[in-house]
Picture 1 (cartoon, rainbow, N blue to C red):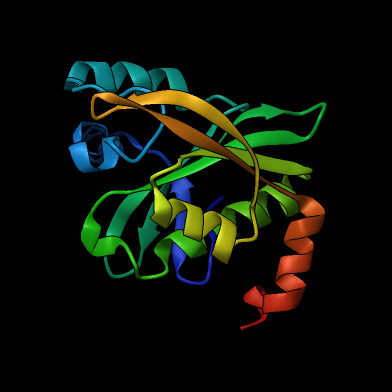
Picture 2: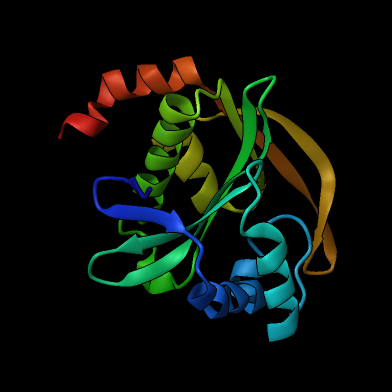
Length: 186
């Protein structure tokens, strides 16, 4: 089953997506904007990661596609806690030419609809490096996520420590958002 936004399709990762995924991990412009650690990975390392993650029901990893461009990025719903109905979410857009076109917004809206309406989760959360203003605007300004806290100096990038914003949204906040913006009725 594919997850559909207004103009993006989120589909399961396939073997042929591995090079796109590897390119995103190895892209220094993407790496500096995401938490955790990234370092150059080989095709073999990418293959091992793919094989370990492709069929895990607690970690849903998806390829973002548009009709005109094909695969343009990656989205996830991971660390799903089925008892407490919560999960972690994030996205990566592969190339600057795909940014500022609404792909991120449509992806996050589609992920929220799937997480809250299909999976019946109650909350999604994530982290954003404090200097990553485009991601903060996407999640907090456009998609109604809330800054719930700050992990002080938790990410080491560009030879310095940076704060990370802890962001989240509840199912009821998503429902209020779609009532206000009529996102799915347009």
